[in-house]
Image 1 (spheres, rainbow, N blue to C red):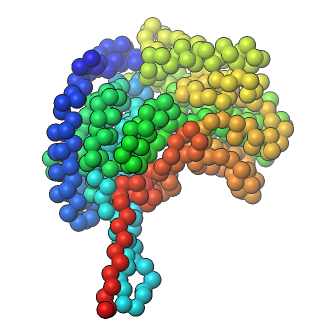
Image 2 (tube, rainbow, N blue to C red):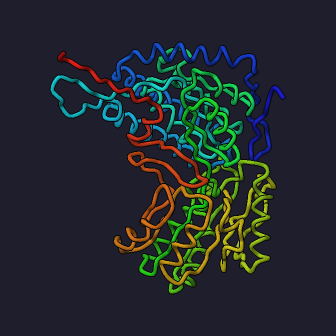
Length: 463
């Protein structure tokens, strides 16, 4: 197959058609990026910072087009897509603010007769294989710090959001970036493997499925290059007995259903202390019923359709499994259309009396507008159940007691632990995960480590 089409998840119309990169084009593509990178690596950091600021200006000028393209490709409500554009710019500028400290030479303690320091050199050509659910945020996490580090970048957006990679390349071109420094490509798995095999490629970032992560990691292992992987989550929330219940209900429901539940760090399972369980369920049901499904271009729509065609069926199977094992489906739980008969929606679903026999609902990733709620007796039971998943991206506790949060958080197998918040990335903190969520770090000053290579300088000045 040489071409592919992107359909609109709401209207079914074709948004765009694109050609896949041919295998015969890989060598030339990577060679051009390599030449651009070698020249770019000789520039000083102030010049790189200036380019990235110009990129931000151009990206912002293009904001309305980009947001509308995100909505057309993913079904994300337009207001949320506009918010993603703004957040991408915040992330870009945050990484710019960390760059001077992260990339400067590290001087060692003085040693008579020697000069010793560590330099952070560019890694080369970076391949960023980005996911579709937050196509701007996932991409900006890698592209901007890579350019700041002195690397060239090949952006391979998910086929569903191919226009987003083009938006980054277009903004960098308009900002005056050297030709071939930032390039958007559309490629099959086989062609991506060819790119990873090229000696000019120094790092690969992949956001996607566990299966895809294993495939990418195997290809990288053939060359001993590092691979950054973010592969999914089954993020838990624990409502402790001293939680501010009204606040916890509003925020955990939003954390579970924002972006139609298609968030890597969205809440997928909720554990509620027995003393609050009934009140939590009553309040959560009222919140879930507020969602308005409809045209994502309409400002009254608060939940858009599922981005991928197979998602409603997968979620339906999880609902049926939960129901067969004693779960009570309080609302939603089936594929639906809106009042106009359009869209591949999934009716937002709240399932209570959940347990871990309901494997799809409470252990494996759902990635949709569905959440299970389970009653727990104490903190120890909550910790045991929160850790009972192959994933570990984020987890949250809802409590008034910071000491409880420290104690519980120390026991949870996760990349980020929250108290009284969820589904949020602070660019000053490393974004990472454990277990099948993957490996590596993006964001913060630590996000530059995988995009650079440490070189030790050990100079004897007296002989």
